[in-house]
Amino acid sequence: MTIRVLSKNIPYLYTQTAALLNNTSLAVKSICLIVFCCYFLSFSETAVLAMSVTPGYFNPPHFWIWTALSHCFLEIHFWEVLVDIFTVVLVGKLIEPLWGALEMMTFFFITNTGVAVLSAFFYYFLYMCTFNTELLFQVHIHGLSGYLAGVSIAVKQIMPDHILARTPIGKITNRNIPLAVFGLTFLMWAIGMVEGSYCTMFGTGLVVSWVYLRFYQVHSNGSRGDFADSFAFATLFPNVVQPPVSVLSNTVFSMLVKCRLCKKPVRRYDVGAPAGITISLPGAESQDAERRRQIALRALSERLSKTEAAPSQWPSMEEPEKGDSPTNLSVETGSVGSVESVAPSPSPGGQSGPGQESEAPEVLIQN
Image (cartoon, rainbow, N blue to C red):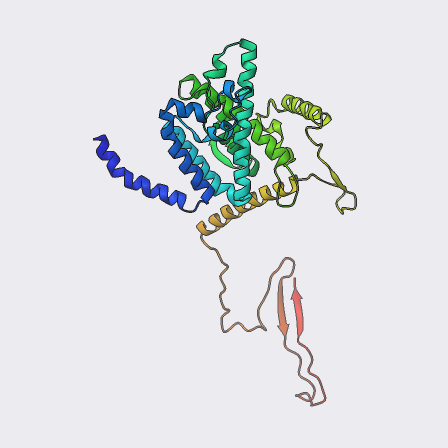
C-alpha cells in the first residue's frame, strides 16, 4: 500500500521539485545536487570520517584542513537533506537577487569554514576542561546547520520587521527567528533528532554570519558591513535582555578595537545639511534604504489590493435640465444664500450703437 502511494506521488514530487529549481542559478543547483549525492556517502563510516570535521584530526598534528570545506555537504539524515535543499533554494530566490551569485557563494563558504574552525576549537576547549577524549575523536561536525543559522541572520538583516505570524503573546517577525531556532535545536537534541554538534554548529553559525555581515561584507557602493542600529548584536535577543547584552557586546567590541582586530565605524557629520546635523554610517545607508524600499513596496501592494477589492465610488455627473439656463441658477454656499443674474436695463435708444459697449450683467448676492 505504501509503495503504491509513493509510486503515484513520485511524478508529482518530481514535477514540483523541477519547477522549484527551474529558475535558480547554477550555484544553487550545484549545492543542492552535491548535498543530495553526499547523503549516500553517510552510510560509509570511512566517508563520514574523511568528510567530517573531527576536532582531534582537524587540529595539529593531523591538520585535516580539507574537512573545513567538505563537511557542509554531508548529512546523515534524509530530512536534514530536504531542509538544506529548501534553504539553499530559498536563498537563491530571496537573497541572491539582492547580493548576486558571487556574494552568495562567498557568504556560503565563509560561514561554513568559520563554523568548522570555531566548532573544532570549541570542542578542543571542552577537552581541556574535562579531559574527555571522546570530544576529540567521537564528535563529527558535518552538515549545513551553521549555514542555516547564517541564512536566518541574513533574512533578519534584509527584512527585520516582516511579520511571520500573529500570536496572543505578540507578533513573530524575522528578528525572532535566529534565537528561536537556536533554542529549537536544543529541543531536537534532547529528543534525539540531532546530534550535539548540530547545536554547536548552529550557535557558531549565528556568530560567524553576524560578524561577517556586520563588519566585512562589501556592498556595491564600496562600503563594508552594516552598522545600522537595527542590526546590532543585542537585537538578536528579546527586548527585556537587550540592555545588558548591549553593554557586554559594546565592551567586547571596544576590546577588539584596541587589539586592532576590528575597526571603529567612521561617522561623517554633514553640518551644512538644511535640517541640522546629519550623521551617516558606512554600510548603514544602503541597507536602511533597501529596508525602507521593501517596506514601501509591501505597503503599496497592500493598499492596491484593498483598492481593487473595494467598490469604486465616483461622484455622479448629471447634466442640468434644459429649462435651467445659466442666468437663473442659484448657488448656496455658507453665508451666501443665492446668486441671481439680472438682465441689463435697455439703453435709451433701445439697442446699443456700433460704438457703444453693452453693459455687463449685474450679479446680486442674497443672504
